Length: 251
Image (cartoon, rainbow, N blue to C red; front, side):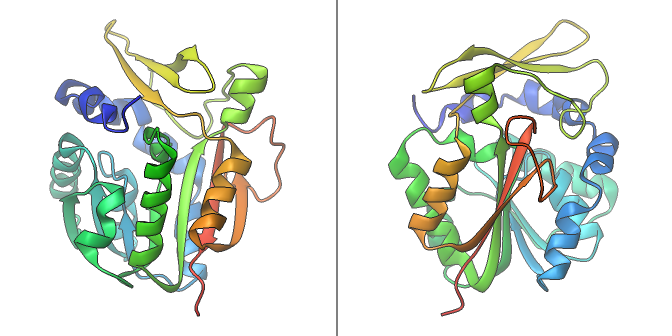
């Protein structure tokens, strides 16, 4: 499986429907300011949203006063982020199409206080070398003491117990359904169904929680903490999403 398959899957048609899938108001209510509080607690001001999608988190954080650079590997997504920001009257520090594996080449070292890679995006990488190269680049662009947040589906639950979802935090759009149609240790293919009968698909690598933590450790991140559906105390067999927060050492 190629790590750039997402570029073909995020068609203009699918991207134009993405906001109705995630449901901005419902998602904001589910997160309940988790990321804003995390960034404030660690005195982060310059933030890179490196999987901006259509701009939900980038715009929300910029509205709260953070200096946000929004990037995505999909040009269609970056275009939609810019459209949404303009429509909402929110100014982003920068928007670019950037592959995670090239973040350090684009931005240089010690650029950001924080970096967020949200919405299950990191699972678009299918080869371990690519994952490691991406994390090395993320570590480089962070300032010493800076933090990275990567969230991903609870693939342990999907692989070991089958798919279920509370639909409490993600994909809150009315009448829109997201569920896997193919599941293996190598890839999970999700189908996104809309009320008008249209269906779209995304193919992702099923990151297990311990494996993701180990990748972060190997890249040089420290003080790694996991949250399940935004809570520090969680049942690993129950939560839908896992947030992993890691820090670049100061020395």
